[in-house]
Image (cartoon, rainbow, N blue to C red; front, side, top):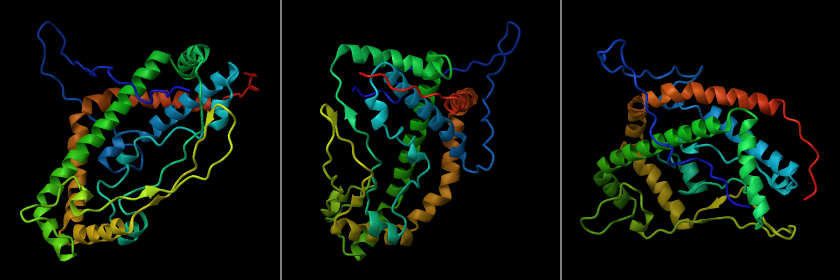
Length: 307
């Protein structure tokens, strides 16, 4: 089966033009951020990951239902649901933060489950899949509008992640000399004149990262590429030792404290830069999510047609 584009690209910039009445334009109004959801207290909570998650779930669910109704039930049978939506937005900007996590994960993280994939080569399937893209979204809105809102909002979330990553790199760079000295005290010396890379390249210290645990081979029907369950990350011994040193040095140099101190301001500056997008898109994505939730609640699963 072909991979579905999870997020749409090239949809253009979101323009919000605010002008006064009459023939003489008034001063441009500054867009205000929408209110934070109840119980939220971080500026990045303006981004409604929960709403986008609901939309993604409905989109994939009804897409698979459509395929099954058209005689292609395997995609639904093997589905493990949509992948997490922009998990980096909810994660700390730099990890690991504790020695326990350093010993358990090193610098890696587990992999979510991967669905088996049906190998589809016939043109009829691809035509059906294209039609199902639209009919799935028609279950909870106008297909083009659902796709537009979904794509623009995902793009906005990616901008937040990228900009926070750039600001985090700047803070780490400011601590580079202190980190270099701390690592040397922990037994990790760099070449004369070299400093710790703010991008955290472990190859500076000759350290190889680990791998994810191997998956036990399972029997699958002909024409199906096997999926995989959730898999643990297995760090190397050298990676774990350096990860522990990283946690100690991040604490001693004040790097972690500085990152945490600046996070609210960094997040606020970033979301304010995109206030117009939030003001325009949040009401739209929230409405699409409500309609998607209602459609999922009222979903009726028909017996799969034989392919």
